[in-house]
Length: 181
Image (cartoon, rainbow, N blue to C red; front, side, top):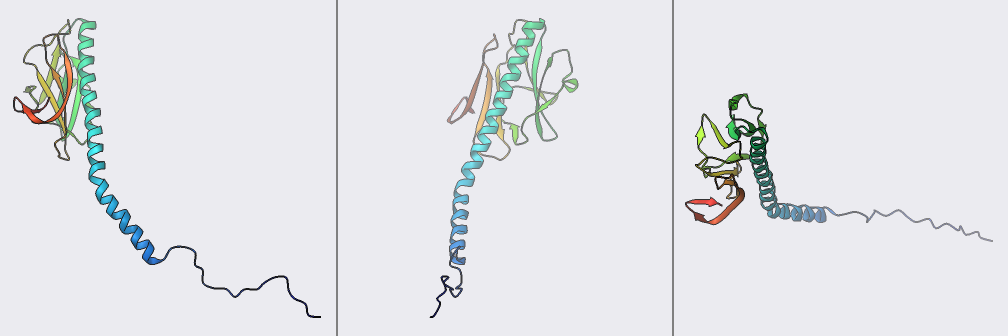
């Protein structure tokens, strides 16, 4: 009687599992093409988010200065400057020399744009609020843009004697020669 083994012994063949070199090259090429298409949009999105955050910081700094002025019954100011390539902001009483204020940095890719109409005094742009929360003319805007270039801009306006503030962004048509309104 011949005994047959219950186990089949197969001759080992090379594995067919996994990807071939051609398939891997095609996948890498597709990922590269998609990355090339998506990267500029992603970078623009990141720049817009950074500008929105900086615009909110400017707006809150101005609100804080206005609130402190009415609370303390003295003139407070929001100050903005570029120091060693870094854009900064501070909120302090008018009597404090801006250099002695505590300065906070914006994101390193943010700069004060040329469309800014707040006057520059000793390297600092200031928005002052008196004890009633009012501001003195000239009014104007602080405009921010990205150091990476592009047309995306964000601005904050002081538009009335009572210190009304509003936010703006870039437009395709100029208003009084400015594109951020």
